Length: 340
Image (tube, rainbow, N blue to C red; front, side, top):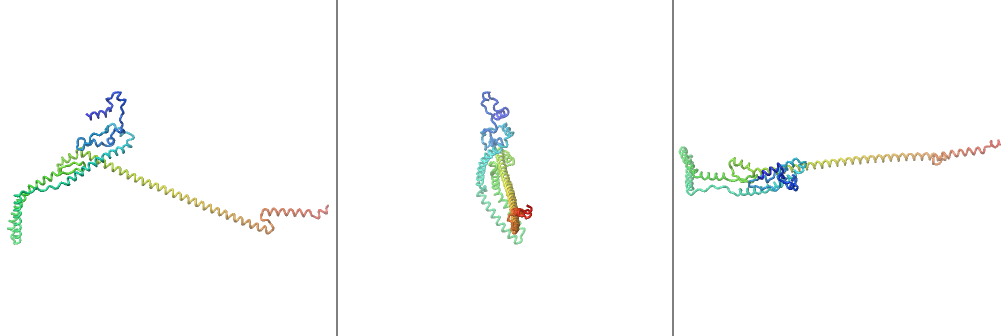
């Protein structure tokens, strides 16, 4: 009945039988609501694996809806929610496997404590018969050894045939107990490491196959496989993140080294520019010093002839002196006085 109701819910919706007033207060469930089972959305719900088995977990408290699962798979937020749902499922499965492993350890200890099945003891009559036979066999073997040393081969072979008969009688006494021991050994138990079930060792192939195809074995196999794949994926993601970080650090170091080299080149270039500027400044200073030395030499030569230090002033003053001399000579000329 519940399965038919769930099927109708999938086909027609959970509000198919509601009145208009009931529909007003009805809230449609979406796949990302808290009431929805996340593990069912992304993989499987462990509650569905062990129905009608000894490991039955009971019904899941959250909603399992195939339409919601379809809408989740078609949603653009699907990839963002998968890690969250898988983490919830992994946490649930970890607890189940932890409890199962404890059960397996207890079962293993129980089997280890069981001693090997001892051979059933012989009756007193059987023990006496066995002792007499072993004594006869011992004496015959001693006689056979003496006859062999004496070279009486035919007689030794006749006694050896008697020994074979006595060994057959001995086996007839022990054989029934050996069959009982073998039968008990065949009924020994062994433990399934996957689901923790006890099995009959050396059982028939069809019974072993029936166990492997059972719900409990398949359910725990799915859980263990999921955990193994989940942990492997997480480990791979960690390795990829580690490699990406190392690559990023290497790229960052490379960029830092390139910036450092570029800075050093700029500093060297500025240092060369400063050296060139200093050299140019020294050249300009040397040129000014040479110009000053040249000016001093010219001033010294002018002073020896009565010139001032300033070359320009010397020439001007010399020209003025010449003009004054000429004027003076004109004013005192005797020729002009005679004319008057």
